[in-house]
Amino acid sequence: MTALCPEREIFLHSGGTVKFIRISRRAQLVAAGLLTMLLIGWAALTVSMALNSARIEQDRAALNAEGKAVASTASKVATYRQSVDRLAQELKERQDFMDDLYRTHFGKEGEGPAQQVVGKPDAETRSGAHTLNTRISAAPEAAPLFRIDQRQRQFAALLTGAVRQRADKAAAAIRGFGLNPDALARSAARAQGGPFVPWEGQDAMPGEFEKLSSALSRMEFLEASLLAIPSGKPTATPMLSSSYGYRSDPFNGHAAFHAGLDFPGSYGQPILAAAAGKVSFVGQRSGYGNVVEVDHGNGILTRYAHLSGFAARVGQSVARGDKIARMGSTGRSTGTHLHFEVRVNGNPINPRRFLEARKDVLQIQQVASARLADIGNRG
Image (cartoon, rainbow, N blue to C red; front, side, top):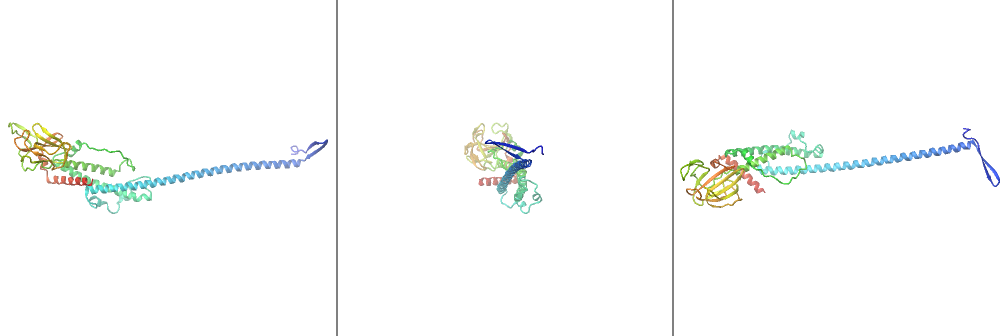
């Protein structure tokens, strides 16, 4: 220490005089200690300020993160509420649809399959076997909506069973006329269309409602096909003058095939459409004279021949029993009568099976007619 801090003398020349200042070893040590303390203090202050700055930045980052978390939570809450509101709206629309569907197809509320789902939820409903939306199905607020969904699904399943039973009756009635309902379905062109409006709930229709939709489509097709079958008498005549099949030709006596039924009557007697359809031909055909043809869909056509006049035009829609022509004796005819044919996919079949259908078959046809008329009145 003596070597590092020897006593020092500083000489000062001023005005021809010489002065000196002696700095003792102790003074040097004190000055060095003070300088060291100042340096240490400055360093400590600098480090403290740096630490405080880092802490402030860290706190600021934590506040920003917390703010983002709060914003994210608020966004999730808003999304959840929107999901619940959307679900409630979907359930309401679905319920309105099913109520209207049931009233349209099965009459008053509280009867049939609807009555079976009134009361306490069953075990399947309580267990939550189906899932509405994985984001909200477990939320307490969504529990009532979840139960409604289950009840609606159960109702849809019961309604599907009732629809299938009625479709089977219509199919049996079609078979009663000697026709194959499956063959009619294959030959029919199902006209469908419209803009694509995606359903916001899911990409696929829930299974119960998909089955209901399919069953309804089949029932409506079969009942419409049943009404298109010509079971009404084409004119008010109690007897036939010639039957379907092989016969002796009335002009030359040779064996010939008669593709329809002949109904005798008075000249000008009204000729009626045997089923609902659209007039597809009005005019003359070789051997038939004046002819009206009505297309009933599904490949079924009725032909009315030897007419004295027309009461319908091409493209006109007619109902069963509408007047479409007048009886006459035009074409290859021996006297006033109606020649009536039924053709399926262009081939003639015996019309007698349609005009002499069983009573129960006709009753099913009448029920279908009343239902479709009620749907039309509803708009």
